[in-house]
Length: 216
View 1 (tube, rainbow, N blue to C red):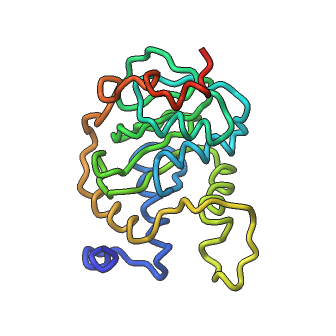
View 2 (cartoon, helix red, strand yellow; view 1 turned 90 degrees about the vertical axis):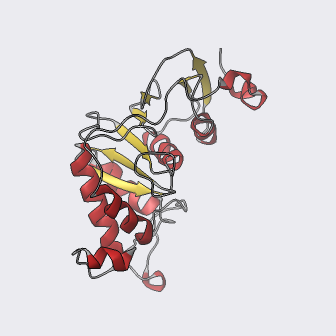
View 3 (cartoon, helix red, strand yellow; view 1 turned 135 degrees about the horizontal axis):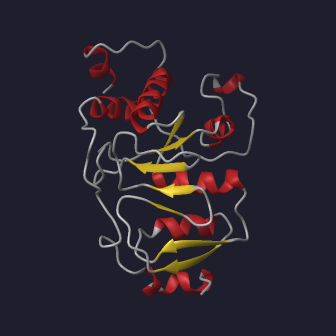
């Protein structure tokens, strides 16, 4: 994919430049100031919860959503509350400014002042196969998240020379995945149908594993 990117006219000096190009193109397409790519939408949601300090809270979610969303809330140290909500493409994790937009991908889809998490799973619109992006207007989040999703490292510094900035997570997108994303994004339409919603997913209230973490 990196070779193909050069063949169609993209220039870069370092493989990590490809990720920068992809993030800039995603932000421009979606209408946000910034974008940071991660290895999945689910981990994007988790990172947003950690950054915003949501712990020992109750997060309200649609009962019909993908299972990893409440799981990330629980991993971040929270309880969950399920409700009957009809949605298509995206919804807020209430009362947070985090949006689960795993099944949405349209021009100018970003919601101002949100942390808008998108999926690049093979069943979604931008079919990288794995990966996701967090769209935001918060530069402080970007500065926090880039090392945090890359083992606390600076991707521009060689490992043996790096002074790690944090106890980070292994949740980064690779340049190869970003290269595929750029090629796909160059062909994508401005308007695309949602790939999921409340009618797509089963009711998680029926899953026994969530009952110990659920507030009614």
